[in-house]
Structure formats: C-alpha cells, structure tokens
Image (tube, helix red, strand yellow):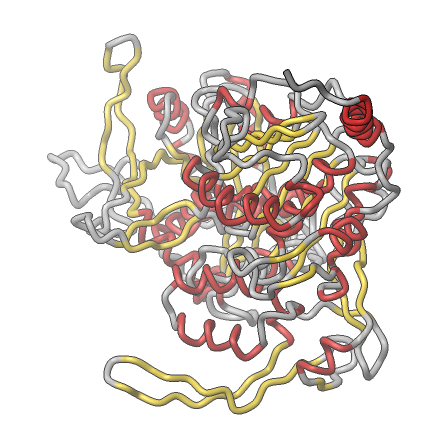
Length: 638
C-alpha cells in the first residue's frame, strides 16, 4: 500500500497553513478607486470600453467611489444620467467589499427580472474577470449551492440580490452594506410592509460601520425618491472651470446653443447639427465641447455641512460630461423626441440628467414664484373687486382672498387655513372675521369682499349649506364642482335642501361650477409674463410660499385615449394636494358670476375718501314679487 512521504505531508500542511494565513492577512489600505484601478477589468458584456478599469477616464468618479471608504460617511446618493458609469459605481463598491472588507451585502433592483439581468450582465462578468474576486466567489454552475444568480457567498459574507417588491428578502437578516439601484423605479411598497428602502436600511442598525448607497437616473419632479435622498446630503454638482472667466459652472442644457437642419424622408425627419457650443452663464463666453471637457472640474457642494450632520454625501451628474456621450448625440435625441412628452422625459432623465415636470407647456412653479412682488398696502392699487374662495376639508377650512380688475388681471391678497372641523361654530366665526374684514389700500380707502364661494363637497355638505344660508345676505354661497367637460363654467344657482338628522330644515341656493373651464383659465393666466390682461400678481409673503405654488400648479391636462372624454385634468406626480388650485378656481368663478361694472367701481373708488367705509360691490338684487317664481328669476332671494 502506497504511503505518503514526510515531504509530501509537509508540503500539504504548508499549503493548508498558507491558505489560513492568507485569510488572516489584513486588507490592503486602498480606497475604492485605487482597488478598482488595481483589480478591475471591463468586458464587452457590460462596458463600451474593454480592458483595465481607469478611474481617471471619469474623474468625477474619484470622490463618489472614495466616499465609500470615508469613515465619516454612512450614506451615499448618486443621481446620474446614462453613459456616465453609474452602474460601475455599485460594482466597484461591491467588489471592494467582497475582497477588502467583507460583510453581508444586500443589492436591490426594481424587480426580480432586473436582478437576473444585473447578475448575468454586471456581477458575473465582474467576478469572472477580477482575479481576486474569482478566487473568493464560487462559480454558480458548480456544486456549491450557496452561490446562485441571486446569492453569492464569499469568505466573511454573502451578497444577496433581490427586487424592491420582495418583502421577505428585505426584512430577514442583518445587513452591513445596502445598495439600491434605479431607486426611482422601485415599488412604492414591498408587499404590504411599507417603503422598501426603509425596510432595507432598518437591517443595518446593528452595524456601527454600515454603508448605504442609492443610485438612480432621476424621473419626475416631486415624485422622485432619489431627488428626496439627494436633498438630504451635501447636494454636490460637478462643475467645470469656464476657460474665459475661470468660474466653476455646471454644464446644463439651458446653456447649450445649437443650430440644425432637417430633411424630410417619408414621415420621418432626419436632423443634422450645424452649430453647437456652450455659453457660460457667468460671463457669456462661448466654448466648444472639447474645450469644456478638457477644463479643470470639481464637485461643488451646496450643503457641505450635511457630511458631518447627516453623514451623507450626495452627487448629481449629467451626461454632458460623459466621455462616451457626445453633445451632438444628446441634442439629436432631443430633436428626434419632438413634442412627444414620453420621449422627451426619457431624454431629460437619461441624457440631460434632469427631473421631468409633467406640465406640457405649463409655466414652471419656480418661475411663477419668482414673480412675487412687494405690495405697498394690504390691497395694491389697481384692484377693483375682492372675492373669496373656501375649500372644505374634514379638519379645516382653507381660503384665499383674491383681488380682480378688468380683463382678468388678479392679485393674491390673503391665503390662510382655519383649523378645526367644519361642524363647529368656532371655525365659522373665524371665517367671518376674514369675510367681514375691511381690506385697505395705501390711501386708506377700504374694500370689502363682494362674493364668497364655499365648496360643499366632502363630509360636511349639510353643515356648509346651513352656514351659507345664515350668511347669504352677506353674499356667501355654497358651490359644488362638476368636472364633466360639457358643463359651463358658471350658471344660475339652484335651490337645494338642507337635511339634518333625516329632516329637511330649509333650502339654500347652490351654484354648480364647471371646474374644468376654470382650471384651463388658471393655467392660461399663469403663462402670462407681463402685468396687464390675465396677469396673476402674488405678494412676497410666507402665505404665498413654495407650498402654495406647488398646490396652485398641481394639475395638468392629460390625454387618456380609452375614455369617452379623453382629455382629463390629472394631478402631476408629487403634487398630491391641490387646494390652492381649487380655491383660485372658485374665486375666478365668483368674479364671473358678479359680472361687475368695472367703470362704475373704478369711479366709486376714485372718489372715495381715506378712512371712508367702502362697501363691497353687491350683486344685483330684485325684490320678490307676489306671483309664482320662474326659474329665470333666481335673484329674488338674494
């Protein structure tokens, strides 16, 4: 029988000890970018450039990658366009963890199908072509059942890959590293268990040295998860030194200038760029693409203190600085998208690296907010008439007082909220203070509200009707909105019953408002840029802050082809509340109902003396006649 020699036994023992000692060696003192430069090789399966990884090819990657090895940072957020190497951000960090600082890793994709593709096209080639990883992660085709397409075991840890909608995978085991890819495409909830990101982050709490990384292309403004995460961090932008003035500026679509020609070929247009350059927003200097991409560049933080306070660095990157995407290719995609909003959104998100705001040709809320002005008095000169619109909610009344002038010019006078249930007297007493207030011009002349419309929708219809009946001689009326496209904006009111505890206790006039027509009027008016006909004035005050404009511009007209009436007003994603939009609608309807004699009102205000009480402009009143009332005589009870 063959027996091993002493030398063979010694060699085997040395080999075994060597493996043990190698496993006990401390990791190299490398940053992620240094590790990637030393070890990574790119393949045609996952990259446009094959061969050794070079972080210097994408200088903006140094800070992103190396923030992972910064002990002060726990949370990294990367908002990035396509063709800037954002997937390799995750790959390099995951590879570094497996090789240098092992621990349990959770990598989350939007869906399980995305997981399978990512594992096959990204993770598998990285492991196969990176020697230090190949030695540590078994081939999934081997008998090692611990290594599959969704799970990779390695000494000291495991990589688990799952979809954002798989609740069990997100809440089962402690995790040191969490990577979230394409965050804006994630499910809103993992089954019935809530936000997938929060579920994943909760699993890192037992680790003092945890790391959380979110990466995504941006999507829709106000509804973007990655935008919200970015705002929690340092909010860094990659800025390039202008070759003319030396100031660091971000290359954005707004500052790209181009000329083009278009050839018609059948039903398609073929575009040719004839001129393309960049204009510095600081000095107006003109530069070409090669010059700008060759200039010094750096990350500039808007909130640098977030690094210390929130342990979060956040980066925003566009394709204008990509070494693989030319400006011409980006502009051609923009031109080819034409007016197709779905295609344009893809270009804005994936190429411009910008959030998309689903407004069609609506004005921007930031632009409208920027037009706010300082009023010299409670009521600016030019206002001839005041109305008030009130929205009824279960726990409050929201109102806006609006000033009007001929040709549709308006002024926001006062926006407020009265907290409390609409079935309590205190709420209505506080509303009375708003409605009875004498709003003063700079001259001292006062103006009162002429007509108030209160929405009776919701759970307090009968209470609203009761309180409007008690105030109808102060020109306070209940309204109900109708959103069918065939309903006129305003029409004569109709008598409606007031029912309390199943009994009819009276009747009240109720207006039906065709809210669709009013919404279009508001949107059209907000586009007007210069004071005058249809222009909207707003005061530079806190009650007309960002939340007001977000609500005011909360809906857009969308085409839904399957419906009988395909054009529908829909809320813009991220704009769940629309009270200001509805209230402004009630105000415009009130002004239209009044049909004021602008010349007479203007003359009355011109001759009024300072301090003199100037009554509101009343609606026409007719005395009731002792005969049977016709439907057309709806003024009789006013």
